[in-house]
Image (tube, one colour):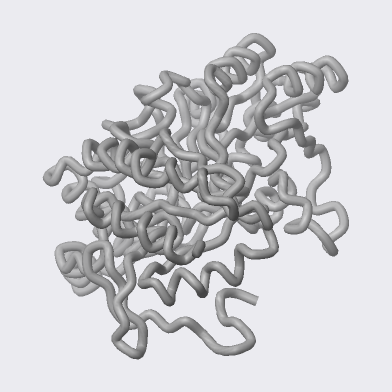
Length: 397
């Protein structure tokens, strides 16, 4: 379970910028920014100081009813300013899995409140990953993650990850009057780093609009700059989603936190209609996490890290695309966002290859069926990207 292997843990003791060190003081380029999240890089004392100041003032307080720490309110207002859909409400969670479960529950409850309670089916895609809570595991298109649990959640369907017609066919079979929401990762992350086909996102968005199905964009990975040049994929592709699930880059992983952006249409019954939605988390909107998020957003804006992410999009593609010529590599997926995947020809080699990369000074990760994940901090330089690609080539032999 977890990251500890039978032969011992790979123990991380410190980090700075795009580097981490192990317990033997060996230095590694962090190829994955932790788990997709350390967007501003390691060792940002500014974030730690903001959290310490907040905890010394008031660590947290309930966000239920009319309670809310001032710092949490400040963050909600800040996020509303950059929301993909103007006028969106912000619902805080403790992380990405919470955000997905929140969106799944809210989608069904929304339709109940507007007089269409039969719209209960939630739809995910093959290869997709939506966290490890019940709804997210049920929605995900990774069968091995669902094995051994039985039916986790009723009224869940899965369509092909890269064909909008598959969604249309499902609508024809089930009837739009039965479908509540379609969950979509702009870039499939943990399922193997798959980029959307040209025009796919706009097409499925329009299908949902045409059939009155809520469009939920899972931006736990892509949100807060990972998409390259924009805060969100929703903005970059002008998708106007009904909900956006986020976490990771919200605090750059310095403190656990998530948030769901809820468009005015979905929020309306619970505000104008006065409906009390009995849902929330003890640590949702934690004041210390809110302080971390505000400091993180300040860094991103001050250092123009959205533009740096766009630079990394180009740099990763330039330096990693040539690796596709290696006989041990099936393909390289890059060119959208600050992400890349090196798909090994033999998927069984992926996990051992993670340790081989360490021998060459790279801390990496396997994802999906034999893909190596590359999603560095936005502060990684082009020279470091070139170094990283060179080390991968040496590791391939």
